[in-house]
Image (cartoon, rainbow, N blue to C red; front, side, top):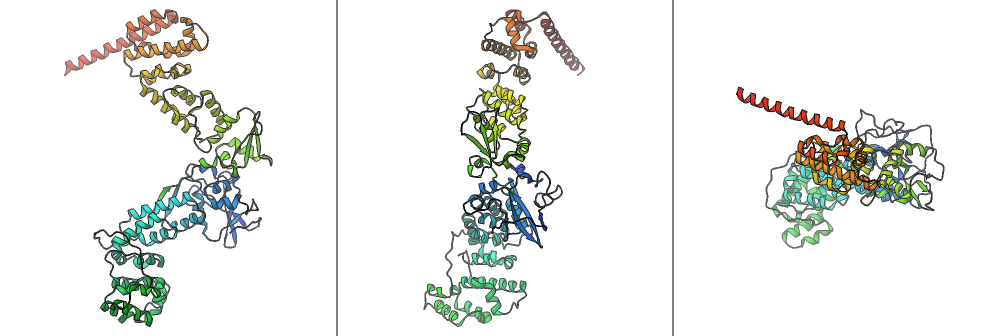
Length: 601
C-alpha cells in the first residue's frame, strides 16, 4: 500500500542503532551522518541519512515511525520496488510508502538485506522475512531465507523443524527444499507424528504432512494423532476439547486427508465408537462401502481428498524424534553487490560532463558515491536541479573507470600504468575510500606489471597490493629481474629488491647486481643518454646505495669494480670494502665460538 504523506507534528523518524543495541535494531535515534552505525557488509556506508529519498511509514500507537531508504538500491534488487518508484504508475516521485502488512522489526530486517552482506535470521523472524522477500520479489533476500531453511533442516536431527519448514517451503514455492522435507516425512512420517512437538505444529504443516504417502503409514494411528492435535488446538483457544464439533472445526481440511478407507473394518469401527459424531451419515456409509469393496476409493472424492504426494521409500528405521530445545538462528551471507547498478541508467540521479566529450556524459547514484567519498557528499549538498557536475581535469574514459570502482571491480587488464595512475589520483582527489580499484589491480597482477604495481602501491598507500606484489617478486626469484617490467621500473623500486632477496647466495647477489646494471642501461636508453659509467651512476641516483655489492664474493666485486670503474668513487669503494671486512670478521668470530663450544663439550 502506497500513500503520500506530509509532515505532521506527531511523526518521528525511527531510531538508527546505537553501539550497545547490536545489529538487530535499525530504528533508534538517527545520527547526523549514518543511520545504521552497526551495519557490516559490502555497502554498509551507503545507508546514510543525508542521501535517503524514500520513507516507509509505520503507524505505531498513534505515531508514525519512518524507516528511510534509497529508491535506487531497492529498485536494483526488486522489480516490485522498481515499478513502485520508477514505473509509470508511481506518479508522485517523492511519495512515502505506508506499510500495513508487516511489523517494523520484520521490515527493518528486510531492508537490511539490501544493504549488508550478512543477516541474522532466527526461527522467529524467518516467516516475516520470507513473506516480504516473496512479495517484493527480492531474490537476494529469498536466497538467504532458503539457505537458512536448508541448513536448519540438515542440522536438525530431531525432525521437528519440518513442522515449520515444510509449510514455508510450500507457501513460497521453494521446490527443492519442499522435496527435501517430503523425503524426510516419507522416511519418518509415523515417528514424526509421535514427536511431542507434533501437537504444536500449525494446521498448514499438518495438511502438508497428511498429503504425503509416507513409509509405514497406519491410518488408525494417524487419526489418533490428529485427534491429539485437534484437542491441543482446542485447549489453546479455550474450547471444549471433547466436543466432536470443535475437533472437526480445528482439523478443517486435514480431516478430509485422513485415509479412513484404508483402515480395516475393525479399525474404522473402533474410530466410530469414540468419535462417531465427527462424521456425517453419508461419510460413514461411503467409507464403509469402500472398505467392503463395493466402491472404489476414487468415489470418495466428494467427501475426502486422496493424497497423491509420494517419494521413494528407503528401508530405514529411526528413533522416535523429540522436540528440539534450541531455537534455530544463524548469520547468513547476503548478496549485496552493486555491480548491476553501474549500468542502471533508469535509477541514476547525478551526471558528469567532460570538456571535449560533446554530449557524452557519465551517470551515477548520489547515495553510492557520497557513501565512499566525503568530497562527493559535500558537492551534492549544493548541487542545482540539473544534477550535473563538470569535470575539468580528467578524461571521460579515466573517470568512467574511477566511477565504476564505486560499484564493482573495473577491468584494467589492457590499461597502461599512466592511465591507472590517473584513476588512482582521482580517488585521492575525491577522498574516495573502500573502492574496488585495489581488487582489480590484484586480479591483473603478473610478472610483466608487478613492478609498476609495486610502485602504485607505494605512491597511493595500497597496503595489500604492496604485500602481494612483494611476495610475487620474491617467489619469482632472480629470473623476474630479467623481465621488461623490471627494466622499466622506477628507480625507487630498486631499493626494495635487495630486501626481497635477503637470503640470496653470493652467486645470486652477483646476478642481482648484473640485473641492476641492465636496468641502468635501459634507463639511459629511455632518456637518450650514452651508457658511460657516470651516466649509469646518475641513473641509479640514491638507489645506488641499495645495490648488494657486499653480498657478492670479494673476487666478483673486484671484477665488477674493474668493469665499471668510473661508476665508483673512492669513498664508495672504501665503504664497500669496510663492509667486506666486517663480514669476514663476523665469520671468523662465529667460527671461533663454534670451535670453543665443541672443545667445552
